[in-house]
Length: 186
Image (tube, rainbow, N blue to C red; front, side, top):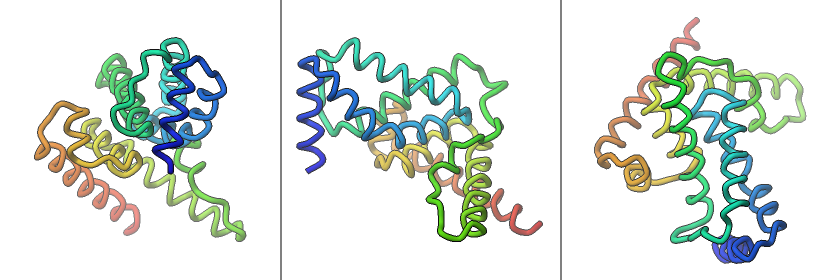
């Protein structure tokens, strides 16, 4: 169902239907923003990447070619823009920015305010731990968990071997586990 709906949206977009662009934006903006924010560890930069992506879609909509699924196409595009921004920003400032609202917005508000606050704090801890990872590991973990891409898809997208992607994922998870365990022991 989603694939057929997405193909129709892309067909309408290619015909210049601006409402199709709006529908695509509304459907995928939260996922794309989460991915860009996790990769960049910078909410404002992530918003810029997302908006740049949709400006490019609007201005060049007739050239959109959908070989796979729309969500995968958009994830690849926002991840590429995020990596480009990381390269431009340089290694000195890649990580460790404060999370502002990135992960906390993804947490559903619970009926119990105390439970909602605990969930928010846990999401913030996870976000900070992901933001502290090296960029290569952070990208793989983000694309795998938030983007729901396979290791093969991530390897193709990043232009490295499947084994390298699996190693980055494994090492990244080990670092996350270690940093989150340290936080629990305090």
